[in-house]
Length: 141
Image (cartoon, rainbow, N blue to C red):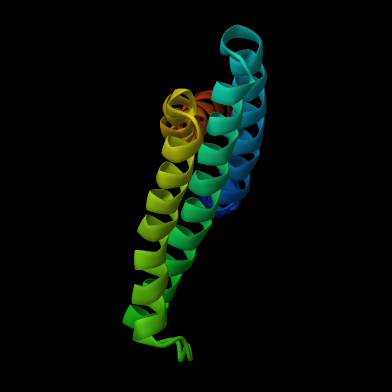
């Protein structure tokens, strides 16, 4: 494999990181939700699932904001308004605050699960990093 092919293979591999992170989020969220349901009860598990849902939407919106800002910096002609980007950025935190309020009012036990669920993207990114290290060592990317 020459340098160009190797570089292209690496670019193709790393371009799929976002999709792999989403799959890791689904897998980790499912396994942990089931384990919490068995170990600590359905309320904690439900709080965790709600936290995962909020974190997933937050992660998606964050990706869109970063992409919109990158497009704006590179002047790709995006029609996205600056106020729309800022609004979505602030909506992420409003969504988290609303979820925390609803869970706190209904069951304070579920609050711990919700807060744990908010860290789902961190766990998925850690899984992706470990996978990328494994692939880089195995394939030499």
